[in-house]
Image (cartoon, one colour):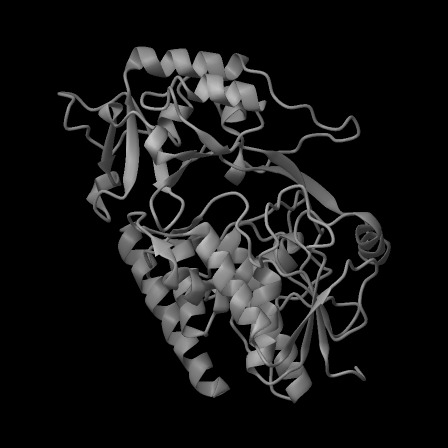
Length: 435
């Protein structure tokens, strides 16, 4: 690698985290972002690190894979996690953020970093190493063709976003404030449904019209972000055991536990906007108003953003990337983010962190950081690079892909606690060794 200036393509979560990790280690970075020249179908602003689907980075508990991953990243000096911590909004046991405030903070920190130069341009070919490609799951056009020509045909699946409504438009006489199991106080707005209301809603949802997809596209929906109408078609009780489960929620105005509960999560710092949790959808906009208006409290809801569905592209990464997301066939060329097959906001940022740190160490002549599959950060890279099944699919972080422990306790929470303690001890050693 002749050039020590690193090219990073894409100013999403992964690209910004990768650029920041490189820059913090004294490496000059050219961060190439196509906005404002061109926006993807899912983006609404020109801010870096824009959160498209939801404002939640999921659980903050160490006994949850996403919570452990965020804590590891905190201790490693993550741009994305620190920005989320500073712009968080109430969400029970989850880390949710003011969507606009978060993106503005990430943009400010990237643009003001002395080692990062932002280049407003649309990349059409793979960059020469050293480089990190973090163009996201909507990568298309000439760049996608260049990637496929080098690595082979990409895979794809469909992702969906949930709608956002204004709080002032809700009928608060039908809404109660609470968090499931009282974790975090009254951080969610909850719409309780009777048995009759639930089944009427499900039957209307199943029969509702969806937006048309392009004729050449064959839907392959990712399980972790499935449209609510697709989920409902699996059976009348699917939603009641899924995003509408009433467990841990009690409406003080009802004598019995609700049959089902729709939750709304705060979407901005002011508490004026709320997204409908678990309601990713591809329904036509008019159908969203009609069907979601059947939810108690939402009959006159004002939608500031409707749910949308879009195609996501990811690489057939196993065997082509190593656990640090470097292309095995080209030293110094990395991929990061959802295009690698990690799924989720925090997972995308984590891959950018690992790729950025590894490339920085390569350029500085330092040993590679061995995160190992015993940490959440390392387990993601090992999954993406080493999956041995026949049908590689995007993966959220979970304890299921983190290396287990010897003599594990039978109690799951105790087992996860011990795994988390071991992981954070290893991260502590990494932080100490990298100083």
